[in-house]
Length: 40
Image (cartoon, rainbow, N blue to C red; front, top):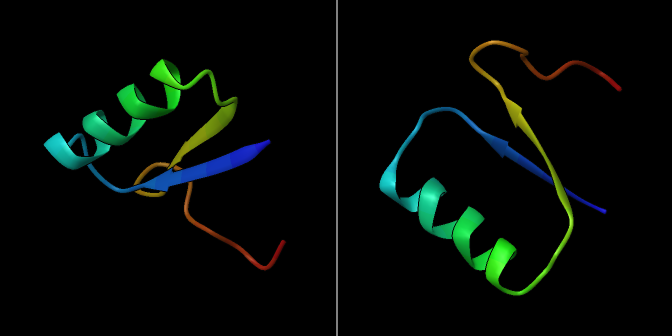
């Protein structure tokens, strides 16, 4: 499964998510403003 990291609700993010949905690609999203990256 694809992990999609983003930092804002931008037009580019919305277009990318729409493309993933249109192509039936499964993904998880993570807003790094609210849940920052760590050393996982």
